[in-house]
Length: 135
Image 1 (spheres, rainbow, N blue to C red):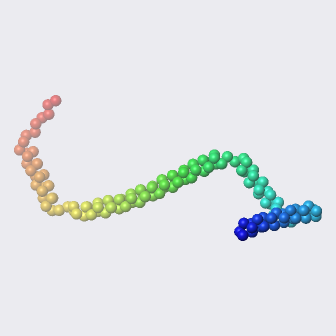
Image 2: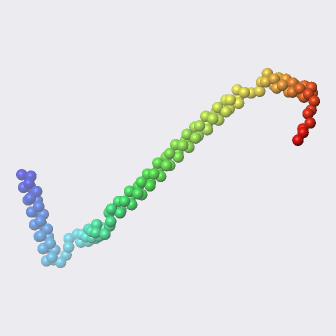
Image 3: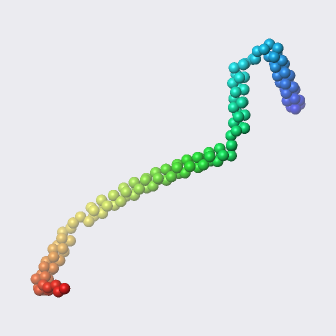
């Protein structure tokens, strides 16, 4: 039954096309002339494109363009990630440096040690005579 409907629909549409073409030919006018002219123009443009465009070269060019764009976007995102990691590490190092400087504030015991060492050096110089350089 379904095949019969498609066959009858095709026959009715073909008969309608023949009747409409005959009517337009006898009267000398076209129904929906502006729309049909625009459709004819678009169909002619599509035919021209299909006949003259090298789709293999077009596809290759578009593939290269898309690959370049994707490569650029990947490089950009990776650069943003590296910069984010750099900021994070910079903050960590800055925090650790300020923490370390606070821990090694000058102490009195270290100062006394340096003073004792300087005094010992001065006494050592005083007990040994200076030796002249011979070259």
